[in-house]
Image (cartoon, rainbow, N blue to C red):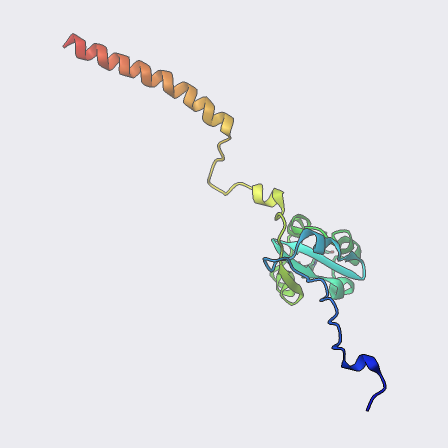
Length: 148
Ligand code: HEM
């Protein structure tokens, strides 16, 4: 028999540790930034979050470039280097989860080859040409019908 009066009281469950992902199961910008220490590095590459901490010393490009991208979206610098297929395969083992934030804007904005982006102002401009022309053609057609 125990003399401890607290023993009958059920242990209060401790608060669960903060989740490493948002409600959507994705990693938020905040969580990404929480891993920007050289001893604990996460980074985003093409919308996926990778824990590159253990790879730091092995990186053929040196640790500094990787540290400078800690807690950030490193898609652009990673792609700019033109990493090999081998480098991309290494990423698989470092995968933590999908990124919930905005995927690298510059990369997203890149136009799709073979297509020509039309800006809203240009759309307006072509409408400004087309409308009077359509009215004029309509007028000609009307005159032509009257002349018959
Ligand atoms: C985090 C994931 C990364 C992995 C797994 C990775 C892996 C590699 C590998 C395997 C190479 C050797 C060449 C090749 O196979 O392409 C390499 C080279 C290189 N990496 Fe990375 N890298 C990563 C991130 C980065 C980042 C974020 C930067 C720049 C900010 C960077 C900059 C470089 C540079 C400059 C080289 C060329 C080194 C040389 O040729 O002397 N890497 N990387």
